[in-house]
Length: 328
Image (cartoon, rainbow, N blue to C red; front, side, top):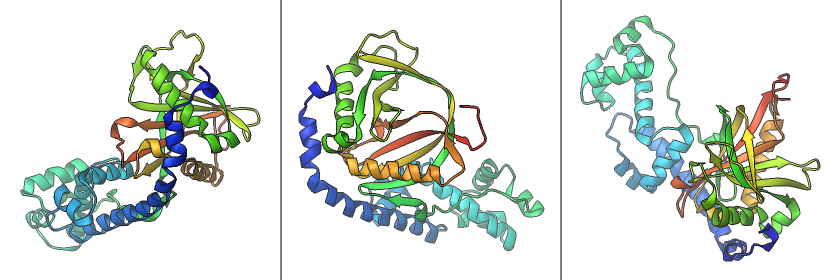
């Protein structure tokens, strides 16, 4: 079945029902970012007072789920792990600039026992508090989250990219040429993705991480007009396939990974939001000395952490330095 033959209620739903929600999303986006900023400032002001997930959730007006997911997305750790890191980082100042004993510093930063503080400090900094006070080493700290590093777009925000090396992997999916102007009107990438997930994903053998949505975007010679779009799933081996299936071997590669966080269902992602997301990635790459290393990139969304009021999407851009010819 070709994309042009595939029609579902989802297409109508995406095209019309969400028009009203787009205006609501802008307001929600601004409110949620403000609440996130308020959370960060609340943590800073109450570093020497009891803090827990339940109380913070009530105080700042964000659900426990959203607080946990936002901090995981921002700093790749739980909210309480972030708070502990900030407390340990603040304790460095007391060790250097006061005569407080170790026990008093431990109590100040909400550790029940002196040994608990010493153990956490050593796990974090690989040195004991007493030895640090004596040797005065330079140590890396848990920085306060800088809300200005987030870029707000229509339905959510973008986090500044992280750099990763991802091992090679295999995929199996279906492919169609996507014309950009048509996609803007008809949401053809959405329809192709739904076709894959409804009709083809269940019959792909040797699936890995079935809950993770992947889409490979391969660039055509005139990529300003169209590209090939491959909604797919990772597989443990390179499967032998017949049309309409295609397979790819994605090589081990260094990537700039851009993350979008939205306060809506993954099925409510609009064309405008995706365009703003891609405009951001293009601008970031062009403003650095990095170059795109391959004629593709891919999208990744872990559906197991998404809900009707939350989603995350990553775009992986293969990159190299300006003079690196490894991937050419």
